[in-house]
Image (cartoon, rainbow, N blue to C red; front, side, top):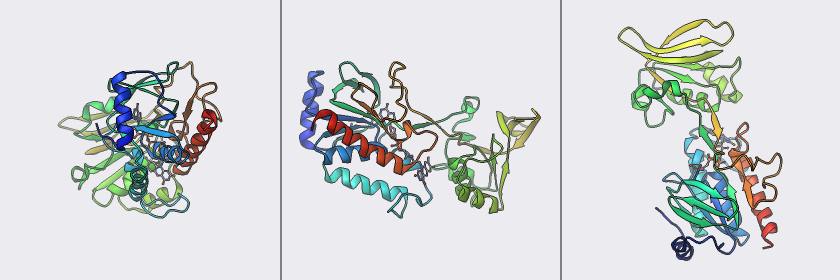
Length: 316
Ligand SMILES: Cc1cc2nc3c(=O)[nH]c(=O)nc-3n(C[C@H](O)[C@H](O)[C@H](O)COP(=O)(O)OP(=O)(O)OC[C@H]3O[C@@H](n4cnc5c(N)ncnc54)[C@H](O)[C@@H]3O)c2cc1C
């Protein structure tokens, strides 16, 4: 467990020992340490609230760790996602804003205002859920994860060198990975289920121009086959039902994301246009509420809005 912020640490440890549901003064628990959670923490701190970030991974940053191409659509900033993250982290450290890593929130008692993570019970005055998106998996390919099937190209580039790599998906992630892999791979095939890619135009144009990248439309993946005669994917055409085999050595799954909403019970439905769940001291921000249009600027804007609303709610 890692921690930042000495004064808050004492308060936190005392609270954890007591396992009490008594609320620390204006403690705002933020679940998720991606750009939404980090921005919310900065805003809460600036407005005189006491934020505490709980992050399940061993580092802060969330999806910022998965963006490799330079950011071109974050107003007022020119650089990489990694540089943006470093800048956010230095602000978090300057503000001595506390965070706990490797703290997966398992359960929330919305009536008592208590969050349960790694057998700790932490009370809150207000809760910000910034849990983002989770990668969509293809269970049919699960047995080959790690050997011939990967969730991303990062970390496995040496396995992809001189190979025919099939990338499943038609969004930004699929095209970004294809462009990263193309210089080292022998061939890259992007398998898109729809009739058009969802990825931004600039990625698509770049992929079309790249000699060793091929695009296949309306292809549904059925299985990965690995026997002495054939290694590759079994595909079905989504309209004609025609079956086809695509020989390939390695596969990357980039089938998009699904919102990490499991902590929200059905009795507390996701609010339509508001960030706050009505009659609750709970705010939902970032990709977890915008899975169709994930966007850094929206995350940051919603973080600022939620912090300001919480101030009004708590009369701070
Ligand atoms: C490849 C790629 C390229 C992109 N390019 C751009 C771009 O150019 N421009 C742009 O505007 N946007 C881009 N995006 C989208 C942008 O990255 C996201 O909108 C943004 O990072 C989402 O931030 P978030 O904090 O809402 O969620 P996330 O970054 O997903 O963070 C959520 C965090 O919550 C944690 N968490 C989840 N559940 C729990 C739990 N139960 N307990 C504790 N912690 C939990 C997760 O571990 C994670 O760290 C891109 C995304 C990807 C993947």
